[in-house]
Amino acid sequence: MVMAIANLAMATGNVGRMGVGVNPLRGQNNVQGSCDMGSFPHELPGYRHVSDATTRALFESAWGVTLDAEPGLRIPNMFEAALDGSFRGLYIEGEDIAQSDPNTQHVEAALRAMECVVVQDIFLNETAKFAHVFLPGASFLEKDGTFTNAERRISRVRKVMPPLAGMADWEVTMALSRALGYPMDYAHPSEIMDEIARLTPSFHGVSYDKLERLGSIQWPCNEAAPEGTPIMHVERFVRGQGRFMLTAYIPTDERASKRFPLLLTTGRILSQYNVGAQTRRTANIVWHAEDRLEIHPHDAEERGIQDGDWVGIASRAGETVLRATVTARVQPGVVHTTFHFPESGANVITTDNSDWATNCPEYKVTAVQVVAVSQPSGWQQRHRDFSARQQAYLKGQRVVAKEQADA
Image (tube, rainbow, N blue to C red; front, side, top):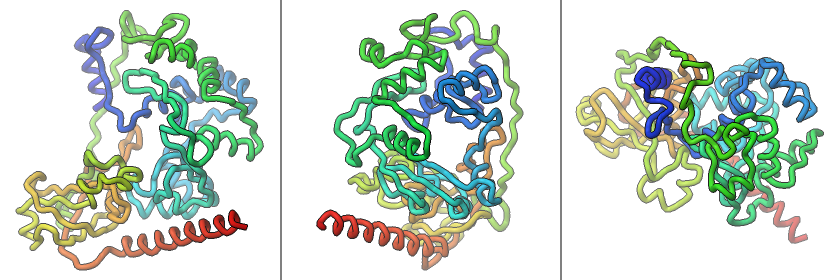
């Protein structure tokens, strides 16, 4: 769909002019910045493929290491490799894959199979309960840096208060790197930006001083565009007249059946953010205190379900139990839930089907059956017991730390 929209924009001349273009709505505030900096397993910063020897040599010289010319793994591939024993360690910063990724039981099995899981976060999230090491994270209010939005606009993030944990995220990562024998010696995030500018052509002209002066900068910002590029592709595309990318539509393999006659789609609600790790710890729960299954009155009547009843939702991946909301907001044959509360197990029932090109999980189409029940699912009972043990460990560590401090 994204490629089709880009093709359409080129074909109709809606690229390279004021007020037109393709502007993706990102899920979080710095997805663009993360992609710019090489978060894809096949790319280095600036969208340069790891197989490019010239680009690799540039980074190898700056970092004093040898880089692999083969792409790394995407997250679903990491899980498979962990289960077959070839992927043994994971360092996770600011993400909760045990709650946000589909087919939760598969994810949990992969995390348990690894020899070393390191989680860095501001809360003991669901993934941290599987961690061998838990490192302190910092919120955006506690660190300096930049965010880059969907229009390539780089903006400064300024520290409002010292990190409660004592170090900002980049300082924790730097300390870990030093402990592992690779020295990183940055005194301030501005020095990291200076390195980005040295190594990435589209950022050659970006600096904190210039960001302070201009307020924000849209990359490319370099010798050809010293103050940034508000509109790209004005005269021509990078590869000349442009290239149409033809991509075939490949439908999902997931199908409703007699065993699973309903289609589940999942999503978010305004008052809760993503997996809710931050927002469900606030008064926002007044608006959304639990994940509920929305079901059409016709489908509810066929199953003897009343508004507020506990219902079991089973799919080919697993099963969980939620409270039902009977509503005409959903169409007959479709049910919907959010995934903001870990105890709901919303992603226990989503499958690990994914897009063929990007491995983006298929959260919107899962064949399910819904029935009235009177007790939690087996996964929910195991999750409750597991979480209680993890919280007990944490409480014990706090007691030990207090005793040591008192001594």
